[in-house]
Amino acid sequence: MSNSKNIHAVEGVDSNQHDVHVHDHESCCLSRRGFISGTVAAAVVGTLGGLGLPEMARAAGDDYDYLNANKEYAAKKALHKATYPGPKPIRPAKRMAVVACMDARLDVEDMLGVQTGDAHVIRNAGGVVTEDALRSLVISHHLLNTKEFILIHHTRCGMLAFTDDLLKAGLEGDSKAIELLSKATGRTFVSPNASATSPAEFDAFRGQIEAVDAPKDKLTNVERLHWDVRRGISRIMNHPWIPTKGSDAVTVRGFVYDVDTGLLEEVTYPGSMGSFG
Ligand SMILES: [Zn+2]
Image 1 (cartoon, rainbow, N blue to C red):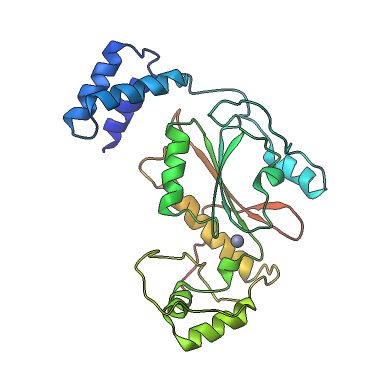
Image 2: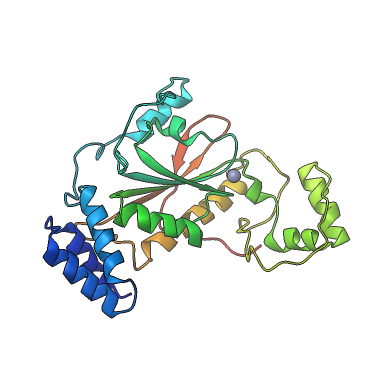
């Protein structure tokens, strides 16, 4: 779909006139291109209208200072309330979407001081902006009104400790790779001895690999983390379906979370992206 078609569809949803004319127009427009049946298009528009999507800008949470909340978290102050809060709107109240590593030492809601209903949290190995993360971010912004994307990598990340080729070789039964992976992780690597086409990539971080859980080192691993955060920001900023200018613009910021202090450190952008290693 081209940008103009996207804008057209959003305007239809956003016009605050979810009447027969809008439904017919959307149904006609979308079905003519063969994307969706008229009945389904009308149902989609009607459902979105029921969510009250027309007002795009909301004051609540727009100026939320999550970095100050993070300092309080690092100082051992509990901000996130863990109990069921009762019914909440579908749209994240603080209009934030976070992409963070799945590492067990990261509690995203706690470290940012956000509550249930405040933010989307997308997690995977590394907090990498993958195709699937982009899918979630596009939906998060265009359908659910988030306007700030926050990328969180962290010190001592396991993604610093291997390469895609090494892991693939180990999974496929290469004896040298099996030995290296066992040594790096301290866990006996049991190879499936099989090839597979999916996942196509593991997205291990570029640069010289190191032992799993190696401490923070500004000259080596922190720089590698910064490289990957910047690549993620770049993927988002250059994506044609994510607006970074104009009234519907999304803000993108990247951080490295220090698992030894609980603090977030912002990554400058633009900057060095690093090389293959
Ligand atoms: Zn990690």
